[in-house]
Length: 224
Figure (spheres, helix red, strand yellow):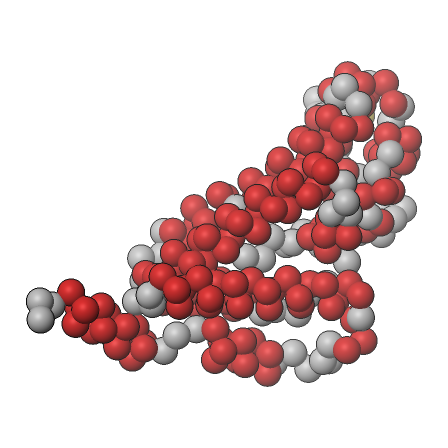
């Protein structure tokens, strides 16, 4: 579930340019603008996203921007599409290669239980959920992630009702942790070692529970 993996840099840090070199200097690509936009949103919020501010961070003129994008809304849509892909299908492709469903859940819950950063892209977007584009993307990401968690809980033997409840509980804990780090970081513990253990105990079904759930399903299928 953890999507916010890039380290944030200071507001005045220069952004990377990855385009072909011109007059000895690399040029700015559309991907550079997108990455700079995501970085700026994570650091300062969606309202801070302006073409002027991005151009200043990248050390270029606005003409470069309009070579790649029709306007701010076009950039935002493409930036959020990239984040959505990384937060959903790109992540689950890797997880789906883990054949043991119990281990797959362990990996997701462990990643979601790490100490959150005070500023994250997810928290910044949630803060801007009044924006129609951001709200639609957040809704799709949440629905995808909860659905994937639900399927993983079913794979370890839980009933559909139990799997749905566990998935909602797990995702709510993850989202709440990100929000706390954003709104009230002082309440989070300085020693984080206990939290992942508590989260795992609360959210990961023991292996014997998987066997019991499968036995109950088999019993219901037997003719009376």
